[in-house]
Image (cartoon, rainbow, N blue to C red; front, side, top):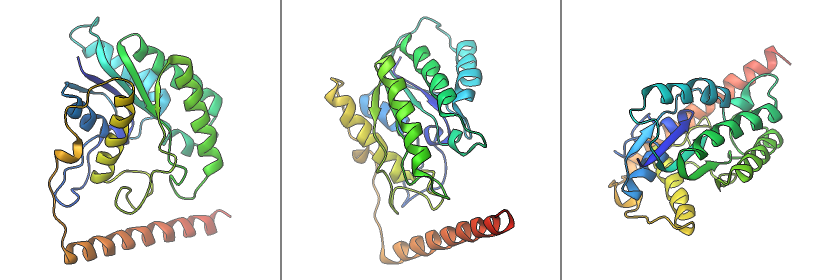
Length: 231
C-alpha cells in the first residue's frame, strides 16, 4: 500500500511556491521516488499526543482494508511538542513509541527523524537534543530508521521562522530519507530533484532575499517585544 505518514505540518506539507516548485511533503516526495502510493494523515500543529489520539484512530476508521500492509511507515513529530509549556520529554518518548508501535504492526519498514538543533526562536538546542535522544531511543526500541536532521538548515531550505522547510527544503529532506532507505535495501526509482524543474534570476533572488530578511526581522522584533513584556 505504499507510504503511510503521520506527523505535523512538516509532514503535511503545503505552503508557498519556491521558484515555481510546489510545496509538497517530504514523505510524498519519498513515495513518488519509490514508485508507491502515498497515504497522508499528518495535520498542521499536531503533537505526538495528537498522532496517537487523533490521527491513528481516524486512520483506523477511514482505511478501507484494516489488514493492509505498507512499504514504509513515516513519523515525524516533536517540533510542536517542545514549544508547549511544561513539555515532558519522557511523556513524549512514550507517545512517540506508541505511534511507532502502531506503524510497526502495519509497515515493512519504519522511518522517523530528529529535529534540527537550530529549530525555532528563541533557540533551545539543549531541549531539542533531549527530544532527539528520546526519538532515537523510541526508534531503537521499534526497529525504525532515524533520519538525522540535527544540522539541517539554511536560507534555501528553511523558512524565516526556522521551523518549516521551504519547498526545496522538503525535497532536500526527501533526498536524505531516500539515501537512508537505499542503504536499507529499498529501490529508489527516481530522485525528487529529477521531478522538479526551476530556474532562478538575479532579480528573483534579490526579491527572495529581501522578503526573507523582512520576515526574519519581523519575527525577531516580535520576539524582542514579547521578551521585554515578560522578562
